[in-house]
Length: 259
Image (cartoon, rainbow, N blue to C red; front, top):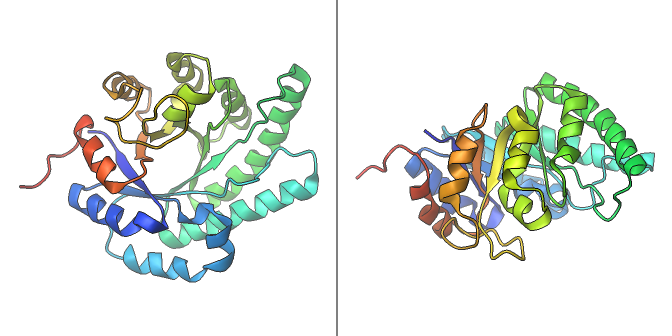
């Protein structure tokens, strides 16, 4: 059976919660990835705690990503990034989330080797400390590819930190939009680090978060490749609407819906 969760935001949380309860799925809560929620709506945390009080599915979160630069050369920028991520960890603990997705945010226009090596070292220093904090809280950190053009940009950081509390979140849509490296090479490079994935479809030009049946990606080919990994990943349907999520469920190996 596939391990499946639904990525939900504040606007569609109730719909996703209903679908997750109906089909025995989990939730990836993305509400607290945004500055407005983090700074202006702390009361939402209590609201979510209440709504999740009887929820039995797996829970994860998406962390802050806008303007976050964990490998900045400016220590004050790194400190701001760390504070945001620690804020996310505290919220995750309150909501019972066992994993948080963060972005690496490599500057893809800079491709010289010395910058890349130094960037990797700074990332490893940052995420090594974060992984120690996460371990104490028993929350895994999943590093997601966004604009990264090469899987080793993520993989080299994970190999250097070498902690079970820091894993890869493979975003399938991002691979096909922002990298020319074949998908199978991403799987080969990241290998057993891939324990989390973001799944959606797109038209080949923009990161649109469509359902599996609506776009250029062939999920009848992609899903068996993910299932063949050393540790088949948690599959997060990062899809814009609950209706499109529902249309995507037949592609997955799930317990049949109750009649």
